[in-house]
Image 1: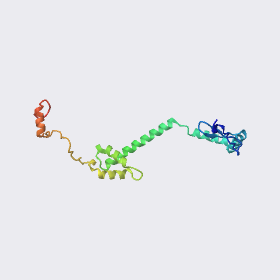
Image 2: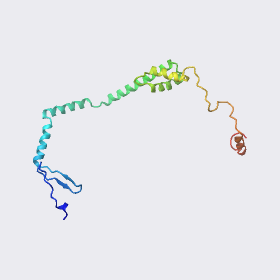
Image 3: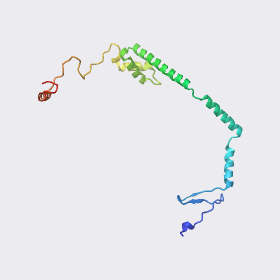
Length: 178
């Protein structure tokens, strides 16, 4: 036999137990005597509260649990109240925007954009003034700047260049100038 198999485990002198060698991992595991287990259990029991304190704690937990019992009707009422308050605030803000000079057809859009600027430091009125300074085209009586893309209704189609003319002459079935 080899030397590793003939070795006897060493005795742990502090507890009087022998560590066992786990051959699969090569690590030692400690075994405890009944006296050591009893001593550890006694230490842990000493840390526990007495019966009266434990009963008071459980009674307090039950009382707290009863007060936190969810009430679906109350939750639904609170949700509806919050929705109603949000709608009222939205309509009030829309009216503020119209009074500030925003055209009525753009009031909803302006309210939406201004609402994104509102934070803890800026209220709706201040944000509305700031937004109107940068977006004057939404004020009453202002026309939006003409678009450079697309065609106006009823205007002549754009003229084609020579390449397109030659293409349409070769392909008369396509719509276009022949």
